[in-house]
Length: 348
Image 1: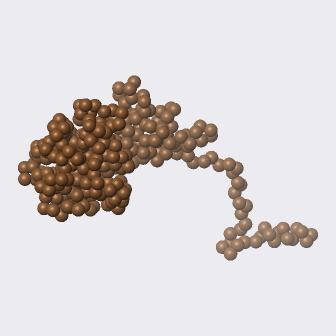
Image 2: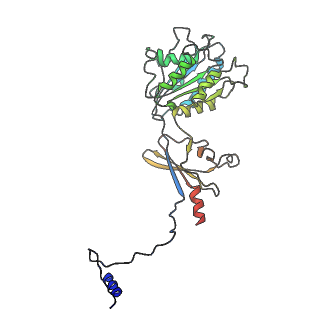
Image 3: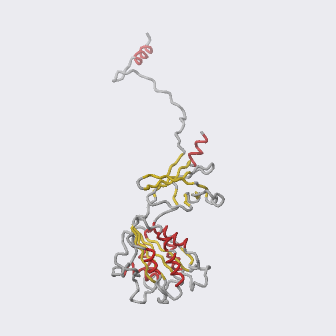
């Protein structure tokens, strides 16, 4: 027997320590198919701010009677986002008059209330008494100074005590038919104070109900460019005081200040051709899970599609409910095919 044959027989007879003979490895399968699941389901919870303080700074000069009336009359639409919501809210009113020491930097009182909270009976009636501040105030409207006094320098006065809370988000609503004429704090001091007031930038928001440059009317003495700047810096609501319909304004303010959202951002890019987006909302009603489904469409097409409830905006990769506002703690589900994975699947 040749030496080569002996070596081959020895190799065949070899065993490993476990007593198992040598076994050829399994053949390699070239290019195994990739496991692809092209469906994405995003789950988003509608979470409102647990605590919010809202301060209305109302111009009480001689030309503001109609505007004060409009604010009070449309306030129920604002309150609809708070009543029964479970939110912890404070709503107060002060004026732009910081010259009269009896009212300067103080919350207005109505029906024995310094401010409105979730325990206030007849909140709309109380707010009406606060918002109708009269027209005998100073001709120098100083909204910035008034807000600063209520929230900072005169925070602990008996009239203001308890309104402002460090842990709550803050919204300031400036309402005036003239420019802000505040001197103290200066703009630099105001901006620095705003930046340092809370631990997160989005916890402080300013809103402006005032004259808008280029859109003036007889009710406006001077556009409130500074108030507009305050709102722009904090992504607040800007509303033209010339408008005769305050309903949409108070509704939008209620939506923003309550922390509720209509727009939700998707985690992936969905397939839009063919249309793949399905939206539903699950809400707890008396311990029962109730599901509501919505018809979606591309933004811009809702005008031609009367059944469209939710639009998809490709530029923002978000869905927007057109009229419905999900309740606090309800769950929003968006199911769709992922664009990249869908294309990869088609190529297999």
